[in-house]
Length: 369
Ligand SMILES: [Zn+2]
Image (cartoon, rainbow, N blue to C red; front, side):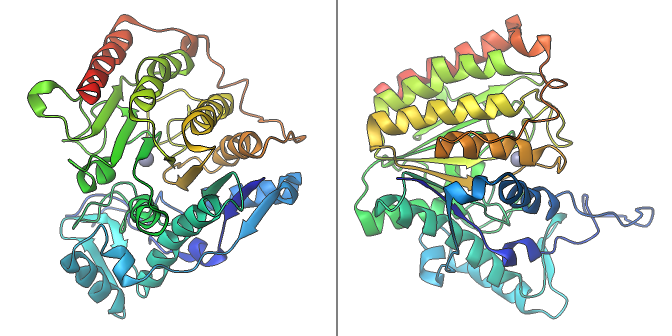
């Protein structure tokens, strides 16, 4: 058994343009490449090739998903909106009020291929071709809601793949453990009150989206979603506590048959869109813990979808650690940033951080009821 990497050069051609920022007056904005760029993703593949790790992986091309597969989690209006913008010769804005998620001309083809990468990963894992699979999706998907593009995401790749797993392989219980530094709001909304999918998101508190991601309480009404919002400047020790007190206990209660990791690398200590302190060894142990959970409950079945990560110099080393762990191989690669990002503060748990994890741990009881 081995690890699959679902990769396609076309996904690197998704064009997010030169205008990054909120809508409105841009007269004073000197054009600058959008932060969701090709660099951080292609450099992952480059490092895997250069290190020789690629020889230990099964590297596969995806097939695009169909309109029907998209419609398993999105509305017809959402499809029509994106398809119409994609068909315009100059493309258009994916949302009325934002330039952050533009639909480039012909963008629909890449959106379908990106979701197809996640579906291909599911097929590989469910057909026991590999133990686990990583879909290097681009564009990402975890902010996309039923009928709303958001945060560089158009279609929810992992959610489409989860519905595919349920339909094609009769999977009854799927768990999402979203480790991107931003809230996995898309899956939360798409699977709200669907008892077959437990969504867990561990993310920076009060970050993005602005109005979602708080700890779930009984007063909110449990909708099969658990949020673990962590204060900025959380590092190794806080994340470990969150896994031990919330993530792993929740998986023990739910006992999924398949685990998805919407995998963002923007909780690193160098990311411009996050304020956390993680390093490559943290991504390694998080992968190891979730592989252990997958082994315990799902026969090892684990599907990772690429989400955020905006430090192109660092992301390849974070991802390389994940791939080494997934494939169970060692390589000569040494993360040149590991020492700089091994901060003594990352080993501390401050009172307000402990309180946040404790509050999130309380919400696991809602799952048990
Ligand atoms: Zn993110």
